[in-house]
Length: 219
Image (cartoon, rainbow, N blue to C red; front, side, top):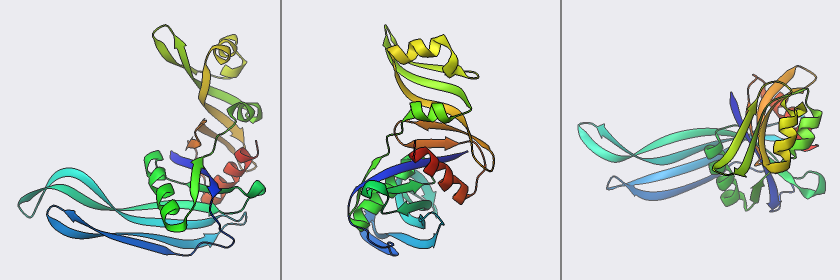
């Protein structure tokens, strides 16, 4: 499974490809001054105009461990994340696509905002249009307020064709679905949320993922 997040660029100028960038800060970690560094490394550009970036960053975690016989309360991990960015799309909206966990996607977004002066928001997917374009809906998650119940999940096959789904759609807020979606190379299954996050269950290469995201952005 692969977690994907899509962000819309809402402000910031990018008339050409972004260049490799770097930041560093000095912080006291375990009573010792450490230099924490972050790099954004530019790589190839896809046929659809998305440029690949690898983000290497030093992350500090509160964790008690033993190092050379002594206990410390914080550790530094070097993390690697991957993202694609296309700065100028239709209606002057660019997109940042991250291929990492949802919480790490927020870190990547914040790094791009700090180093390049952009602002991003999660893309608000139109789930009903995605359902209409899908060949099957295997799960639907609703936020509801029914007595003490605040969430309902339906699972099965073609759940969107049931009367219960219609009832839930009228009484709750649809938040996420698991769908099967036909692409030229294969049928793909993924969970998609209204907050711009996707959990992909198929093994696709990066360019196939970008093609899938482009299809979803057009809906």
